[in-house]
Amino acid sequence: MRYFVVAVFLAILFFGYSAKASVEGDPFAEADMFASLPASEPEEDLQLGGYLEFRNQVAIKNLNEPISIRQRLRLEASWEREAFSFFGNIDADQELAAATWKGDGHQIWNASIHEAYFMYDTDRMDLFLGRKIHRWGTGDGINPMDLINPLDILDPISTGRSDNRQPVFMGGGSVLLGDWSLEGVFLPVAAVNGLPHSGNPWEPRALKVMRTQEKQGLFLIESAQQPDRWFQDVEYGGRLSTMSSGWDVAMMFFHGYADNPVFSLENVGGGAQLVPKYQRSTAYGVAFAKGLESNTWRGELAWKPEVPYQDPETGLPVRRDLFQGVLGWDYDFEGKHYLNIQAFADVYGAGSIQTQWQYGLTYELSSKLADDALSFGVRGKYYLEAEGAITEFFTDYAVSDNWKILSGVMLWTGPDDSILGQYDDNDSVYCTIRYTF
Image (cartoon, rainbow, N blue to C red):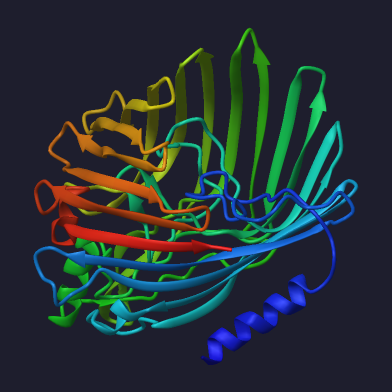
């Protein structure tokens, strides 16, 4: 209740006076949070909304260890006046499943500002500043150049083909140069992935093993020291894009820190310690998309020279060139049936004896019924090199303009030490009920 009161009080401070408008937020959001609001009058420039959501995700193999029992209240607001605008939202969460997770540091209650940023938008120039999710790339769920925002380690898998990103403080903008658009983004302090607490359902298997060995007295694991020096541990990138003959083409680069640390075993004070370190990394990429009536081709290529990498054979931290590629195609059958297929590949150390490949497919096949109120289908990700698969059978039903039900089954398969197979215990049935206001 204390966190709920704080969230409401902050909402009043943020959103407590007049105005209009169009909402700017996560372009990959699952729902339009303002779909149920009446059309605003031209003289207004503030719009309020949000949703209340109940999510239950129950493990099939062990009903006594739920993956998620989350209640979320999100309050949103957008404000616009001439060329200036603001978007912000606040979350108040209760995660009851955290009480059943083994280990320390799990929070049942949490209240936080999610996004909060200002924009200045003209015909030739756009600027933004604040806490924001900012995505690059054309891939559908797999984006080698989507490096700006870190992953939400408490909820990394929202569906079989997408992930969740955390907003961070940044500034940036874009300017039109004839037929070209030049965009830049600057993070005054690096944004990286933290390490999940022990017992979190999404704790990677390798981290579990290391923590077990630590308990056995083989070594100590230092806390991951995230790069947190403002205006020293910075990240930045640029994007140059254009449209020509129906083709959207973009060239990108990003310089900062690798999102995940690499571990090295060091002798500290006469004892062995496993030290996680975040290291600098740079990426270069190109992306393209081409619409052809009812179908779209899209692709993305990235080169990440000397990227920090934990060698799966030796366990040692090394640096290797990483090449990544995605090529996808989707088709919409008269707005009723949808097909999406993507091929992807990651190649570490191309041309060397230690060259390692990871490649596979993502897919979705879905249909709509009941005047498009009901969507159902199957989607997932499949590695072709014994790195596992995830399959999701899903249904989304819009009961009304305000109520929506999302349900399904998620299945993880593959060897215990594979990228996806390591989450085999997370096979689950889920149901989410959302009320939008």
